[in-house]
Image (cartoon, rainbow, N blue to C red; front, side, top):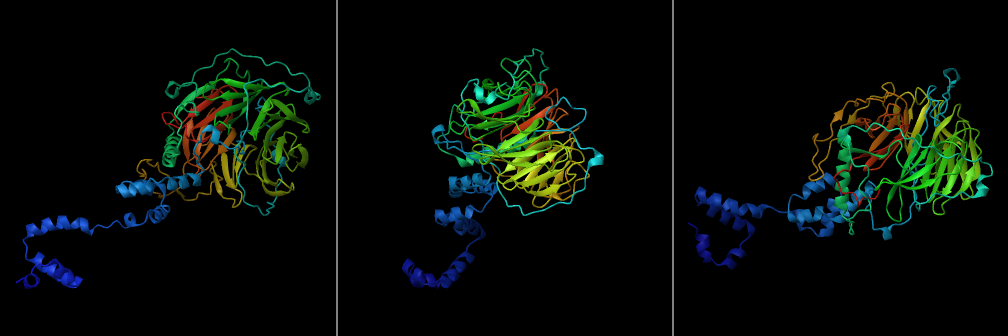
Length: 580
């Protein structure tokens, strides 16, 4: 019956000479003659021959190009398919590209660090008639004085925020040149206090120092997949509100501030990658803290005659603003102040600067700008009708907010008022942070608001300001396989936002989250995209919070209780290779 086979004599060459169609017919006739049990065996043997890994057979360069279009969750899933796919999905070039998209950088050894520029966090200013003991606040405008002003909109070019700050320091108390003090009276020595403070709740207890980011086990070769997965883990920690709480300073600690702490800024030295903390206080001093040991590295004093209300560290310089109406610029490398500016007519509430200019604002209702290198006066901006509580600068744009409830956008080069947002809050605006095009503001109306100055879209914790837009629910993503707990993004109604119960004194934002600190003794973490409340951090402070700052691993806060609280989200996670 199978004469074709017999006719060929079983010669493989004769079989190969047949057309594909003839061989198909021959194979079918052979299979049709076999029992079912034999067919089952043949099926298990034929199945692997039917599987074809098209991507795996491609040249590596082509396969990697295909994988480069995948999100990181898909790459994690692809790594589970086969050895070949795992090698492709783990390629460092893919993960480096993903990290660069988020501006997540590998911390190189100290000798590889390059000098970079930087921006200062927003930390300041508030307004309430009954809070006059907070020197960093200006008065609010009376309701009767509120003017309705039409928005004056002009073209706004996109620009990035100031780069990360850079400086060098030594563990020393700065000496002050005599010629810089000609306009200053002799400052009094700082007094110390020995009153103990109640310890934070035990369930948030933690060591009083952070693990050194200098790291005992530095990673010499960058592993960008590890870097990305670690950032995902930290982001999940923020989303889950998982942290440990420690105090860098408590009232009466040795060599610490002896009075209210008004301002702070986290800062990383580019030469070593070591991160420190600068703080300014009512005791007229500025202190630099070693976050690894909890000790004070140096003290800047002898210039300000009153409370230090705002600081900004950038490019090897530190600028401080005070209720003595002065702005002092310190050269950290030379260990001395290089410029003292006294042109404001009342307390200077906030100071910011970048490569080109320094900007300050005051209770005298003005914003003043000065140009480097000699800090010659550039503009006096005086459109506000009440104390200007905070400013922020982003290249050629300046944002100012005031007790008159308005937010104003200025052209930094010409001094032109580009746009005015009247009644941006129901009460005076106390604090801002600006990462173009997003402006985050906090107010004595107890609410925060995020605004895109290009589109006028955003969200607020105030129900009356919420546009009730549909948003996508975010899920906690597994850093190992990329799976999400919510099963994907699903349209949701606007999230419920539990606002602060008192004035919002300080705000800060990055690409993922928003952080706010309030007179209600709490720090809150919000989703930057949706405005949903992520974490409510309480129990660290026993007084009003005046300033907050944060990075991808921690939140730092300070206030009138003289505590410096560190809310550490990186506990148990190796982060020495993360560039902060």
